[in-house]
Image 1 (cartoon, rainbow, N blue to C red):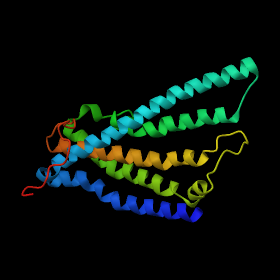
Image 2: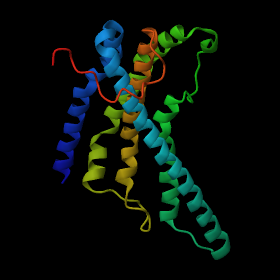
Image 3: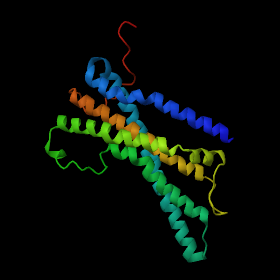
Image 4: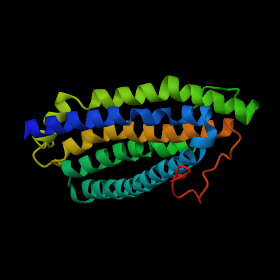
Amino acid sequence: MSEFFLNLGTGLRWLGIGALPLLLLPIFTLALPTMFTRPARWLRAKLDAVSSATLGISIALAIFMVAVQILVIAGRYLFDWSASWANDLIMYSFAGLFLLAAGSALKHDAHVRVDILRERISATARARVDLAGLYLFLFPICLLIIWSSVSPSFVRSWANFEGARESDGLPITYIFKTLIPLFGVLLTLQGLSEALRAALTLRGHTDTPDPSDTQPEAPHGT
């Protein structure tokens, strides 16, 4: 079983490496707008949809976390009852809430910014700053998170279906650990969407994906 998950992890790593050229699509859109504008807008719409879906999951986790917290408090003070699995549910829901919503937060510009001049510069200048920041900071950090989190200990956690240390805890620690690389993937995908937005802005296109772009434009002559 351990060898299976080790091979699976290696395969996923190589799959991720093979997908890295997609991060160059914003650059291609800048260099060859006629060829890449429509595929860029189509891909951006799909990536934004992924972030919207994970935001919905995060909202559900927030509601679930509050409900379980109320149950724990009522059980402790009214019936002198407590359980490790209930505390695990709160902790896992809290972690999932933030890690899964990170991409959507980037989409809605809800992350903390340090560029205090952003609101005083033009949309074109903001697009240049965003594009530089994504390639210099966000993408390298996200790729490092993904690469380092899929470690031998992570593989062993899945191979052994690692559970909680407490006897009555939830036996899903291996799933909990998966939230870390998933966070890196989701943030990278939304970062790619933001890079595409910046590239399209620099080429004079609307900042909003075109809903009519349901599929990439087929090459001429086919």
